[in-house]
Length: 240
Length: 218
Image 1 (cartoon, rainbow over the protein chains, first blue to last red):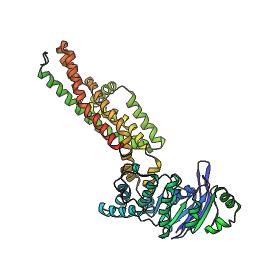
Image 2: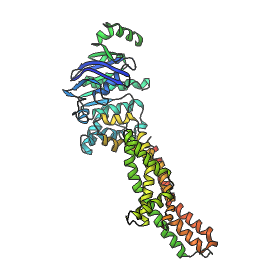
Image 3: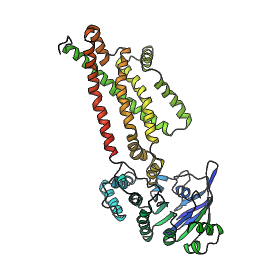
Image 4: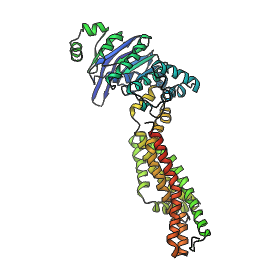
């Protein structure tokens, strides 16, 4: 379970999170929608401690992420994250990208790590690209590799930060298919996205973010069909 | 030899000098690169109160002419009674001088690795140093290499200045022969130039080869 309690965060004088609270149950898929610059991505970076917070707290399975004694490296093994810019390691092959953390962080042998990585890469449809360098892949393939790389660590939670925003339109589908597959398999996911149809289809709940606050959170039917807040209705009207 | 009065003995004398040139280059690059990596890591991530003093010292090393540094350090070490021989003094001074340039090369290489790539590494649970070792330095090296090769070739030629503290390296040995056989100056300098070229060429070829190999993956 991920519990976010009244989290505030500023970059300089700009307050990007103004008291965000949200709970994500294990097995749940929560989509986060809202305009650019509303703080959605920042919230994801706070969950695995890539960004510090100013006040409030975030608990992952009861461990407070930003407490001084928390072993963030250990915590992050349980939280996979995929970024908008897929962030492949360009000097490593697809297979090496996927095995690096398995070997260096989890201490697995080369054979063990290779076996896990091959399985994950086949799962996302990259079984024939093992020896290829990321630069030879399309954006969609690189993004699927990033998903496989995160999944290889067998995380309990997966965070997706606008993973299709930087892709050519014809490549969006293959990445969404991979995420759909994960959601069906019961992975706990927080998905920051602009893909409204996708959010509506796979989510248990949808959160609407605006100006550093969650204005409304509820089942997709509520958010998309009968939003309670005028801000939500206005946003949906502008994007749908 | 070659219809001149330059003897094999002269050439052997120059080869001995060339050996010293290589030895000094090797130690200066080894020491300078190691120190440069440490200083570069510090400079790429330290707060200003560490960065500014270190930067000032390195600026001095880079700006004061090498010849002056050799002579000053040599006087200092004899006054201080350190008892270093001129060869060691040459290596130490040149290593410090090299480290100042290498620091900036390493710092530039580290800063050239996108923050997003590093976030990806950390998000997989890698520690700061694992990220450095397996992601940042391998990627940064591609940026650093061309400048580092250039630095190596430059340092090799800078070794000539150790004549000031009495080390007889390649250029100094050539000058000694020229003093004895002034009419053969041209051929002697040509031989010296050829030796520098024979040593430098493989280094620059190696650099070009690595660059090409890495570029194929990008």
